[in-house]
Length: 256
Length: 247
Image 1: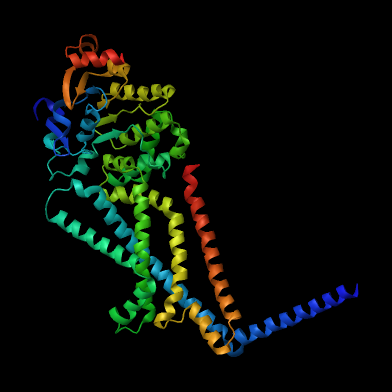
Image 2 (image 1 turned 135 degrees about the vertical axis):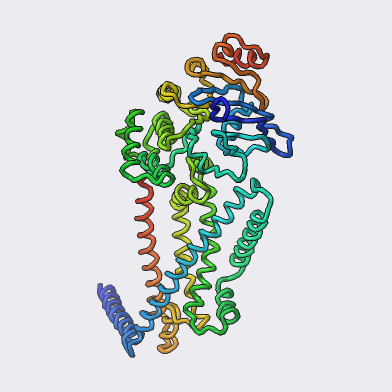
């Protein structure tokens, strides 16, 4: 009986000690010298990079996807001439882009951008947006292309038979359906993008991950800053997943 | 424009794989305003390919297709403009699944004819009324039966006020009990003077509605004539063989 009692009291003391450790740890890492500001400003940078890279990636991705799928669909039927040659060249450029971007690590691409291509630029945030946007664009392109290819050819023919030109058929008929089909894959790509920006520290950007690192370097305690950073990423991804779920349900209205 | 032919095709050929496959091997046909032409023939005879070449969904290898005296096979012709005059109904309906029925009917008139929403919707509702589907205007295609979808597809094409309607096996993908309702709409159209080119296996429809029946095989027109001539007194051996199988 008394054994159990001692066990309990030891456990209790242990928990209390651990709790106060946590509290001290928390204060040390976030309150002292206003260190929480590193996290907040880091989060701000992460969000800026992700948001603008996302827009750049989607625009780039859709353009490349339309070029590539149009090439596959129409090149065989095109008449010989300058237009056809030009189309082949543009399609070739797109293929090189996809191969290079998907074939090299994003961290290396980011450093090439920062230290070589934009070596004279001091705006590292802008460089990061461009690097991540170009990177994401390659993946978005293949996702969107698979969506376009998944739409029945009859949809396209129905559009053309009504008198829509190629572009309008794509815009009014194919793309909206393709977008709905690839929304889960796109959401996944955006989640990857958000988390991938954590390597921005390689080019001296103080993003969320870097913010945690700065605190860790100052306090020599790893647990608090790293777990805090992880939780923030997790919450953002969960929120985004929830948002996409809402959108998916709205778009699925027409299938009922 | 001699004899006011609406559509005139001359020696239309469609070859695949450098001519080893001849889907169309020289098809010449003149279609008058208001005429109902039914094309029959075994599968692989080129009848669908011919129909689809009329609005250039299939681009012919050679030959010319004239619509109202304009050569639409000429690359300088704006084919999109001419397609607006040719409504097409497909075997698999091809309604736009992400739009309501009403939107399916209004999108082309609004975007291509620049009609106002009110005008386009008013006309769409009249058309839906005609085929008995006005109450489904707010529904999506997935909520309709096959026969209903095909009726919507017909009025979607009609919403553009076409000169001619092309039907590519419009009842082949339907459950048997739904064939009648679609044929009914087509008969109604023919009665109102619409120029129609219909590829079908519905011999009853051909007999009843066609002004001219065309039998195609091996990418060629084998025989052409009134329904009586073709069905009661076929001259071509292939026509006889085909009809003996399907009638």
